[in-house]
Image (cartoon, rainbow, N blue to C red; front, side, top):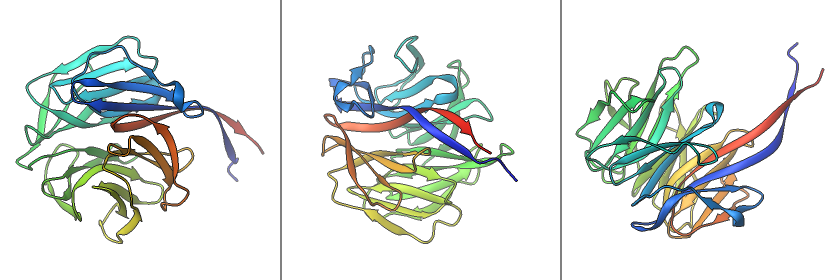
Length: 273
């Protein structure tokens, strides 16, 4: 019989993009147990947007909607402008099988992907207005697809991993924005203005209203170690976390005008017979 495993948290860090356009906009890092001691990374940004942590390589990727995508180490060192182009990158994700980053650009109405060395940008999807976020669903064999949202179209779309066959997946309620995937439960989560919803990750059906009462949610994230959903409430000036059923809502961090949040959990694995 398989040996049971227990994960013991050593440290959980929050990476948060925040700030209004041109005013203290940047990437912040704080320990989850010390949220009032956030440190701002040393990088000049106009309007910080999506953020993604590659925990296995100790790197973080994040977008400035004024034309740039950055990469740095988790402590803010080795800051690099990975891409600089005429566009407005917003949501971002990483494909571990192909070693490429994917991002949504709401100005160019497109989904792009590129190499980790800042080269070979590919346009995967065009002609969907106001694309905002993108999240990849990768299978064990490397196959998969991605989801992307459009607040203007109030919808979530799905496309093949190389951008083929884009089609409507979920019609939202008001203004569909950030997306998060929880493959263990087979659900897709999304922010819809001030509310949160979940549905079946394969069919888009079985829609559930998870939580409401926030100011204006932009991006969301799932911590897969403790099974909690994190949301960036731009108007509420806070990061919140909750159970995947919307229960036990907690304020995780006070921060002015948060856009996105990513979680890094440094854990030890203890095996017991």
